[in-house]
Image (cartoon, rainbow, N blue to C red):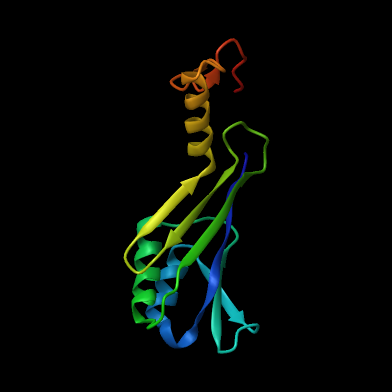
Amino acid sequence: MPQSSTQFTVIPSLPKKFVTQEDLDALYEECVQHEDDQDYNEPSWYFYGDESFGDNDRIVEVFQRILARIEYPVVIRIEAALTCSKMIPGSFGGFACVITKDEEFWYGTSGWMYETMNRLSEDGKVKFDDEDDKLLGGTKHG
């Protein structure tokens, strides 16, 4: 059976003095791991994931709670790759998220592809039927 996974990194590392044990536990429950980041000027946590990405809303909520404790402007960036052990169409892609103290912005590769294909279709450059999820006249992969 094919295995799907989501690998992601969180930038920047966050100073430990702003991150509580409750934050670490909540993130861990959502598959966000952490380790010491020795490259920062102060003790910091580097956050990442190598198997899956938990509940988007919960992850954003915890990071915004951390950002609220930081007295200077910080923007958290998450970049992720979606992969699968079998080459199945639609099983790959990625996403990015930008988190501020009070906003979040998401961008997915699949959404971008559909928007681009629809725009090209509207311009008459290609024929695309997003209801059927294939190029007209092409073959459907199963």
